[in-house]
Image 1: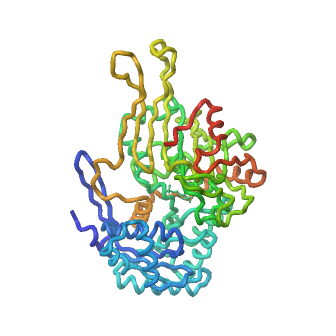
Image 2: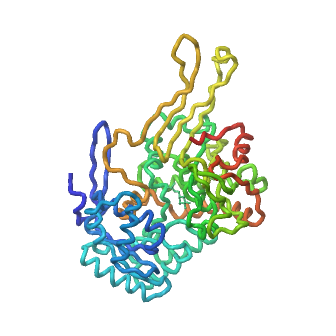
Image 3: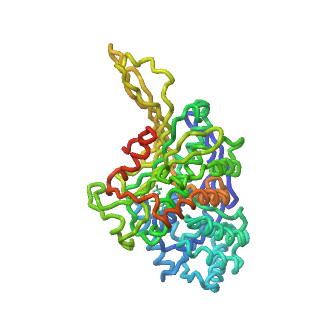
Length: 516
Ligand code: BG6
């Protein structure tokens, strides 16, 4: 096996046939540098630096790699490294030897984002460190600042002649509605080509989300029944126990529809609903995902209550600890009407999915944390066991794709109970995602960071995808913000969300998959 940590060359591909029929292809990135704008912020501390450190520790990065952190905070290389060491320690992944090697590649530059001269300093430091680390000119600029600053940074990067050839990673929120997303798009594409732009949705980096494609298209048993003839409905749930935390400034402007639906929820939906491309290739996969967005049936704003329920948490208890309501959180307006929960019914108007409802729900401060897709199949056409079961009904079959935290795939079906009586019982076929795997696991941010270094755009959001998802949600957002319709239902922190969401699905004669 080649030494993964010592490559001066561009990406290296390793194809292998692992144990027990494992077919892998691993690709490692070549030399590169990364400038993180917003380096002292929450995202850099909680996600970016810990992920980059783990990649480096696990020898998944080139040795010719370095990072420049840039932000407004007064720091130098030493204090920046100490701050990041603390951040990695908090994740529990700190390893002294690996940290010494990694931190020697960390530099810091205090900048004022609006000051043109600052970008000349970025350019100077980049050139100097590129020589020292032998990275060549493979540069990545990561916008991890508040989105208000994006335009300014992009324009200043271009003015300092830094846009040519570099890659640009943009974090969500990518605009706050269709109009602002288009305006941002215009600035971005004035200075960078679409080829250079990487719009992150970290949900796409989750192994279990990618597994949706493997499950569907590497097996012959699922696809024939993956359609309106056999599927009754689909449920996509992202339940969180955390509240708004220290992000009220952002969340008050966003709410759950912008924070979770415009991106993660609809992206997962696209993996579930897309057609198979002819080849597993980035643009072809992205084409198919975008076709799903194009086929979304607009929500009926004339009867929005029929397809959308919104909620906001009030004080309660999560994991045995009392927690405040949303409107009592730090920096949240006491009369805030920002939704922290949404349940939505969506239809996809195409041949495969006509008439099949997709129920999407996501909320903060719920009872348990889990993300899951449940594919619920139609019942048997004729129940020959009716007499035997004393007239009772049997429940439907379901395929459960547990995205996190306990990653697994489960098939729910019925079987005869052992013994002399004729009794049916519900049983579960259960596959745990990491069982039997002994290799290195990488998380969502690690995946998308590596893919960006490699220039692989399959797991990034394309320009048309951003526009279509905003086109779908903007009318509803505008309606809610102008008229507060549908009304906001309060739910207790630590509960299952507002009862109205259950009533809403019950009206369709269906029941949400259990929160476990
Ligand atoms: C982020 C949202 O994109 O995703 C957060 O801004 C949310 O509000 C988070 O908590 C959820 O991600 P994960 O990976 O923890 O499920």
